[in-house]
Amino acid sequence: MSELNNIALKIIGGGKGILAADESTGTMTKRLNSVNVESNSQNRLLFRETLFSSDSMKDCIGGVILYDETINQSSSSGKKIPKLILDSNSIPGIKVDTGAKTLASSPEEKITEGLDGLRERLKDYYKLGARFAKWRGVYTISEKYPSKLSIYSNAHALARYSALVQESGMVPIVEPELLMDGSHNSEDCLQKTSEVIKKCYEQLELHKVELKGTILKPNMILPGLNSDEKIDISKVAEMTIKCLKESVPSEVPGVAFLSGGQSEKEATKNLNQINLKNKTNFIMTYSYGRALQQSALKFWSKDLTNIKGTQKVFNHRAKMCSLATKGEWSEEVDKI
Image 1 (cartoon, rainbow, N blue to C red):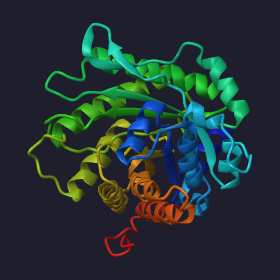
Image 2 (cartoon, helix red, strand yellow):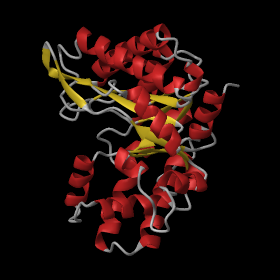
Image 3 (cartoon, rainbow, N blue to C red):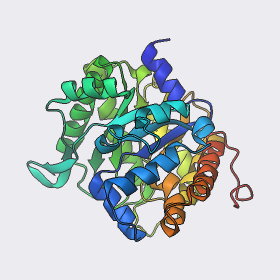
Image 4 (spheres, one colour):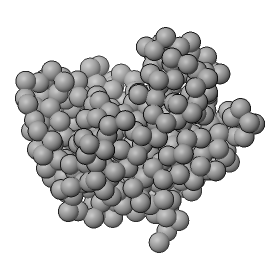
């Protein structure tokens, strides 16, 4: 077993998933403002430190994706944040892309930037304790999108990033996200997600990326937010598994789904159903941001000093997600 494969399995194996805490300062400011908390570096750190020192980290969170600001910070006890995460039996990771910008020649689509100077930044992040990285490609679904240009350009960038991450001794998370915005149906989502993922692996193999040392972070197969289609969880699971079976090489150890526009409960319920039906060799787990943090954030915003209470809310949500990785979640156990 390669060292990279070993790291990947530690992150997503044994009922564990990933806590995506890599919101940029702008995104985190919007989240804090939505619950009437001032966004400053102290408050951003306080909330994240509260999660990172929760009991559920040990059994439910195999990896934490950090933002540049956070990986360089220290906790209230003086401990570096990556060390705090390691001491909680989890692995620190880092978001390395610099965001999605307008794609030249196709202004309604996006291309993710951040390759310039990446090799040097990865060396620095490795020294800070990061052992995996994340890069997100963003795609729009409509009648004419994603275009072939968008599919190729983002796959190429994801592959170049992945090769550099593995060169630096870290595991790349490959995140091609087809957004839920729009009125597309689930069949459109299935067909276009499959096309995107296949192109990503075509490029990863061309760039000689060791697939056993990667983790895929895709969207589930769902209709658009403005679609009239009513879809049950069984169909979501079947279509999502079909997409992955047909698009993802068998060497990939596992899949950590993004939650996209789903609520906490929806993201948990859909993951649980996927695992009830999963007959593949892929580990199917979570890499959730809002779907792990939202209830804890709302609770914390009422009293920033109530650390234990906030952790209790977060522990519950993390435990529910962990149960869903084994197909053991139910409405009954999800009552606080």
